[in-house]
Length: 453
Image (tube, rainbow, N blue to C red):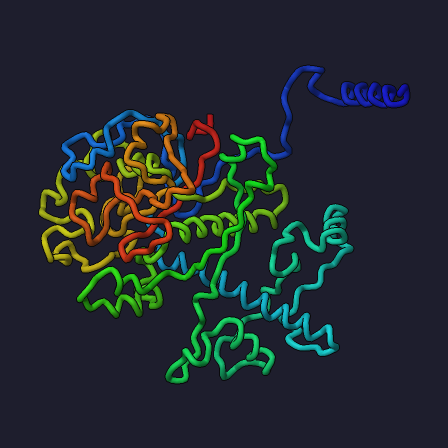
């Protein structure tokens, strides 16, 4: 006991004598100064208070959005809806991860029998001599660097070797076996000799912590960690199923596939898929940062709450009907200000029969495009008719995992002007996908002062 006390005393004197704070309380000093960095393609929404809800007559008589003053914190928001090109990056990453994992596992399996096959796609050898003591311990004890739930058992995939897609160029029969059996549609489902990818196999697996439930409970942390497995490919059949007695097959076949629509908003995405995309986007950014020294992970990308969405859509204009401020859907020159259905049956009078490019028309005063029209947008908030009466006035949001109805906002290319109003509420079920619903993401701004003072 005397020895321990002596060590503590010596440590105290060593700290006091070697420190430059002269014994004053100065707080913990970091090695590097941190600055908030605006994510690419996003605008900083300054936050503040505003009058949320209907300020004029409620044409639909829904009585679900009474006006009230609420306050939201600053955040970043995508300038446009997530496009087909941006969502394809997610789909392709999932596709390539699955293929590389299957190739590596097959190589490991065959190598265990003494056969060296698909060596160029095998798991990367980890040089333990360059590992930190922590990494060595994790590999020795758990066989991975922490991701024990990974289908690769924590091993590293080889992303250097290109994947061969042309069936006539497959390097070996073993390669063909893996591709045919793991990723392509069954032979009986093929026609005209075409081998296409089975999109049902493109699933993204991730884990999330229900931090709100955990904070309100005294249970074990592990009880609030949930596994999510989400098919990521858009439901392209929505262009057929959403409309009876209508010829929309070209949109079904080409809208997500063809590069002509790369800059158009992705549709056919459920709320669950939109949330999975947010998780992947966070993972993509943090994986890059973790490869750098002294890097700090970014806050998670997520869907906007209903209040955040309305505040951003208003663009700083109080009591505005639309993001552009006025009560009309055309300019003083008679030009339409959004993509919607202005008159019965005349979808194309505003310049587009279906959707338009995500960066169309003029942005609002926060630099956000198409906050009204083009496609409706998923929000984080569960739909409740009485939520305006029960939710907090500070960063209001209702998250109820049991409530499958999620708020959508903004109206779409097929909607009348009423649904384009920034205060109009609507909903869809979280497992549903539509040809007129897309999404955009947000990221928390750390701190409360956007000027950084």
